[in-house]
Length: 634
Image 1 (cartoon, helix red, strand yellow):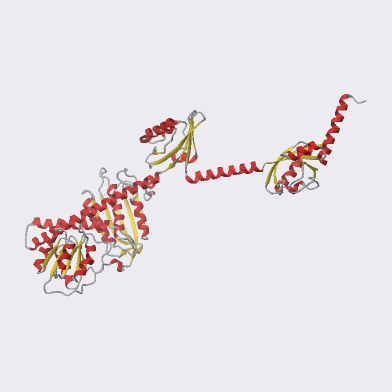
Image 2 (spheres, helix red, strand yellow):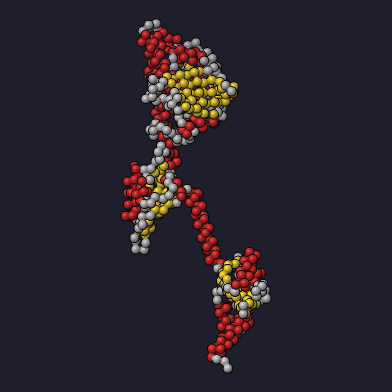
């Protein structure tokens, strides 16, 4: 006789068996509805993977009973499932695993999360129930999020953007690695006061004001500030940007944002401003040189005329010598500042350039500096314009001047020597030595870096040597530095020599004009003193001189029928330059034209007979005039 408990157990076992048979056969309507409507896909497999039953037929495959479960997953997932099933059979415990295979519609690339439950008979597992959930959308979403996060990390890294966060409640500050690098620290500051200590003292009030305004207004405005400089280190500029994060009730929670190192941009802006000032100064200097040349064009011939008349006044000779030195100085400065729009075929004689630059420095250096120039014999030309080579030498000479410290008990000597290279006969060596303070090996190794300088901010930009080595390398040469701290520094330029070509000589075609028996010269110049001086210089030679104050006056004179044998035409006139007026004047007269100027134009018009540099000595004026009239250009 069964007891009540035994009867209940028997009924329960029979119901479980009935449900198992119904699951396999699909005859139980409740189980069938649950299987068809459930998100999970249920199936029963044998221990070796054969499908014994399925909760519902597949849209893509129909009934899968009798097939192998491993045929519906990728090979890697099949290997994983075999391991899982073996462990489940050995332990009798359920397992959870992920696999990738085909969807119920037959499409590939579906991800499943499956619970594997053993069906046991005694201690033996006779079947495995698989309850699988399609998690494809979740897996794809997670993968997309990971890819976007990686993309964002790569973008932040590539942009060199420093990221920061300031928690208002806790006061905690979070920085990424790049921001620590910008501020030169190993980790983020512990609090706001430590953060302020990393700011340049000149900008600390600005930073406090900007953050206070952001907390008050809810708007974080972009601003620039400097990082506290390291000892003898360069200034670092930062552009800070951010936003204010609030909760739903409007309470400010934190500030978040980024910072970018804009030091190079600041340096370039300063360089552009400096270039603009230099260009303006160059234009001003050109105008001053023109006016000064006009004054010298009067002074020089006048002094020479008095000297030729036999005056024995020593003051007159001194004045003439000073005027000649002033002329050479202005000419050297003008040649040095002329722009080269192309370097193709341009060559320079290093001996002449060095002599010109030394002359400028002797006129401007302190008198207690001994500036020596050791000039070798002529070797040839180098593939570098006189302007660029002169600028390179000026940079080196100015550095040497600054290095010779008057506070030190030492001789202030700067020596420039130009000659053949001992180990390379095909090159020229320019060696500049100074008895200055010298430099350490660490400084010497960096002197050619752009913006590196040991000078105070108002005395140097750190660009002179960088410019110099670039120009020397462009010409195929080398620039090296040798230095002994406290003793001397020597800068050595070696440049390859090049053959002198047609580009190195300026030739004018000799005039083929008829020499009239009565030679009349038309002087066209806006300066009355210059016209008067040319008249006093030429009339004693038997020439007839007529004058015009501007180009239109010259055209009116020629249109009236006046005959002239030669025209001296000023280049720099206020209303119309000589080059501009030349074609119209030439159309009215076949007389040869001599262009009289202190600054030669970039392009000399064809047909100009000769170029007479202003200021000119009386002998030079007469020589050019006679040479043009006689058909032999001096």
